[in-house]
Image (cartoon, rainbow, N blue to C red):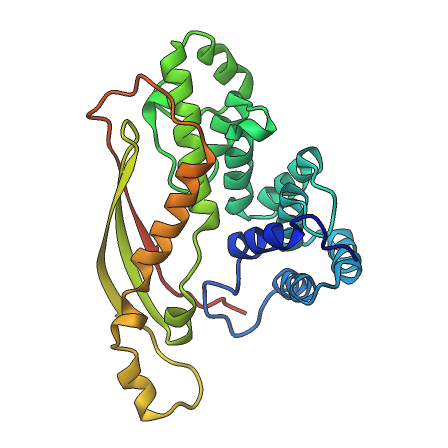
Length: 278
């Protein structure tokens, strides 16, 4: 086990970027969720050999949540040597298993100058994540269905358009991939919505929490717990979470020149709960 040369910093990045706990209430977690939680626990306990061994076991069972975890471990160099090329197929396996976050992490990684960048791959995967709907970055204004046609279309783009699309694919995919449910709100079963306005020419974000809502608490709880759900610290943490990951996204990518001043990207992030059906 080795945590030398700033590995603790990489560990913090990984744990901040990975799912700390399921964002949805579930009566029974999936096998993949259990495996990912166990790998995460071993990383937190500095048990790298145990984390890698548990990862191998989960990958042998084709658990997509473990593939997502493994991709992040290789991308950030936590408990394994940093290797973007080994992260790519793991993220792809996660996507195939129904984890859209894998597509977002691929888009974010391919847009990152540390890994290339690869503009075509970044834009292709961004369209397969959540929330990327940039008509000027697609084929005929829509998500590309054929990677070869996307590459051919991109060959006709002006350099400014290519730089813009790669930049936005990276920034928005990083935000979607690394967004996490605030711990306090999750503990009190409180959800909320955050409106985001992104001005890429500046670049800057404007955030506004547009609402919060309460979900049924499960199990036994004190009456004081119901009152505590109303506290600002519980209901108002969503904007803070979005702001933190948005700031990280801006720091990750070089800002391209030539973006029109009036360019605006708007989206709303909804934090809520769903129940798995078993």
